[in-house]
Image 1 (tube, rainbow, N blue to C red):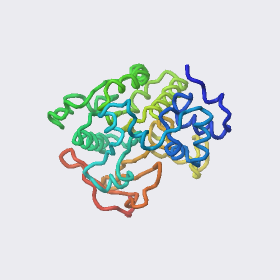
Image 2 (image 1 turned 180 degrees about the horizontal axis):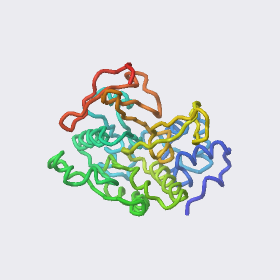
Image 3 (image 1 turned 120 degrees about the vertical axis):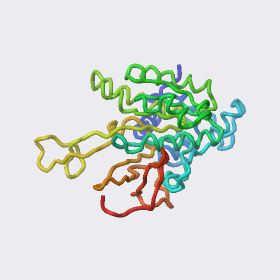
Image 4 (image 1 turned 90 degrees about the horizontal axis):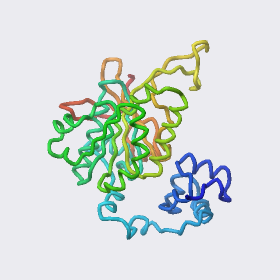
Length: 318
């Protein structure tokens, strides 16, 4: 059994950062370099080196982190894979593409094009010669649709159906083993991820499942995309949670899962929504690092023949 990080002589603040990023034991740090850990936790490289020294993790350079001799060729290629899509506007908005270990949340109402956008990333990944794991929580990306949309390329897709929270909980516990035996998988799609959370028996089960997601994704280092629905929540003018008795409270549509399911230092959050006249817009809500050359945060787009077409950046009122 690996030693818990809480037993190491590190500061409480650093321990909290490690825990929030999904690290709980010394073994979790084995694949980290001081550079990658510093960037992920937003700490200095010197602090990151101290953490690795306390954990007695053998120092690793960026070079041997990328090319460890024990990994297969397919795993090495997956480590270097950056996932962009045909739309350079969206790819640029995501810092040039999703890198290994990063996550993208696509949130929006039904019919807005969440699944169509996820399919753009699937096409790109398959075109680059890698495989995709689809975890279908809502039957929106069932095998028939994948074959109708992608043709024979769908042969490179691994499909798992998890319609309920119990199936999802079991599969998330099995996911590390599942991926280790399939090194060509470079992208995981959680389609309709918010659906199983609508039928949870208690708040504690919800918390456990969200925590399992965050810690598992942080440790895996596999790129993932999740599509989620929006839910109505009451907010005060300052953004804090309100109740029906609160004066000045307003109802707003927010991603149904909140911000508890993903490692924040690795995640982009993209909101899709309709304008007053039915036009479609997308807006970046959060990024790991704001791209310097990103276009305007508000983009108009359409879905044409199942493909997402982005138009000019928009500053118009919606």
